[in-house]
Length: 218
Image (tube, rainbow, N blue to C red; front, side, top):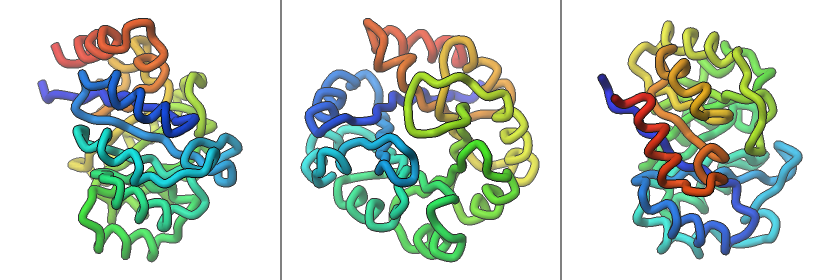
């Protein structure tokens, strides 16, 4: 069976939270950072509020394969700053960037570029961007921007649609990935899992991570 990674995720309230998580999540080789600007989605996180510069956390995050999910109305400037801060993977949301700009960025950046969309965006729109992406991130929740939200069954239809058109592209799932949903998601064709509260908000995050890995990597 193909190994499926599980990546801990945080939405940082401040710079200190990034530093703390970078220390406590060392059991994982990968780290997923959600940044939300309060414009594209209602929630807001560091480095938008309080204002900060991504490069200040580069040293503590360099030990990871760092993925940054750009939930921001101005993703290109944010992407540039996070690349300087050591990002290895970037997720763009189709609602925030036109197709030509996305294609140009993806063609001319050294990092891996993924594409995602909100719950009410047509899958055909996502597929048009996926042609130029390295991977696709599908949301297991309808309203993006915060952790602990309910699972949406429509993600299974989206997995099938992506697999049909791009059978070899990697599919990450982000949102409401937990012990209840993860096996069904893998069976449907998901390759990689981004996990927030089911790991980082548990009494023993490392044990939670190991437990989820065991469910899909026996």
